[in-house]
Image 1: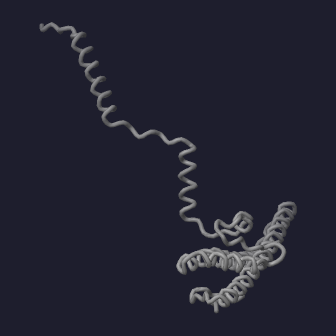
Image 2 (image 1 turned 90 degrees about the vertical axis):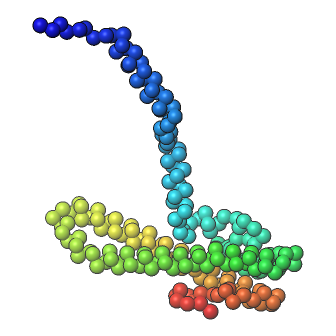
Image 3 (image 1 turned 135 degrees about the vertical axis):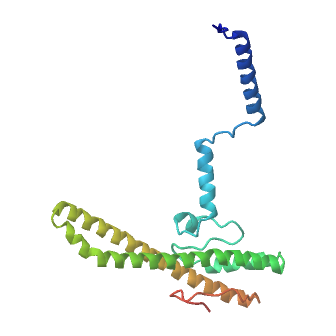
Length: 209
C-alpha cells in the first residue's frame, strides 16, 4: 500500500506569497480608476445640462447686468431703448466696424432668443390649458370619491392660474423686446448702421420684417 506524503507546507506558503506579490504588482501596473465622488458626479451633471440647455426665461437672465458696454433691456418700468442706442453710438466711435457689428449682433441674438422662447412657452401653456379643459370629463370617474375629486379640481385650478400668470408675463416680455428692437434699429439707421440680419419679429411670431 502506497503511503501518502504530507503536503509540503513550506512550498505552499512560498507559492501563496508569490501569488499575492504578483497580484499586487499587476494592480500597481494597472490601477483601477478612482471612484467618482458625489461632487464629481454633480459637476458632470451640471456640465451636461448646460451643454444642452435652451434659452429659459427667468429672473436671472431678465435682470442680470449685461456683460458688455450695452446695458440690459429694462423689462420693468420705463423703456430704455434710448439708453441702449446711446451706448452703441459711444462704442462705435472707438471701435472698428466689425467690432461694432459683432457687439450689436450678440445683443440682438440674446433678446431675439428670449422673444422666441416667450412665444414658444406660451404656445405650450395654451396647449396644456386646452388639454386640461377637454380632460375634465375624465375627472367624473372620481365622483365616487368626493374628496379626491375636489383635490383634483383644486390642483387644476391652481395650475390654470399659474399658467395664465406666466402667459401674461411672457406676452409683456415679447412686446417689450419687439418694441425695443424696432426702436434701436431705427436709431442705428440714423448713424448709417444698417444690417440685413437685424429683423423685427411680428407680434404673432410668424416671420419678421
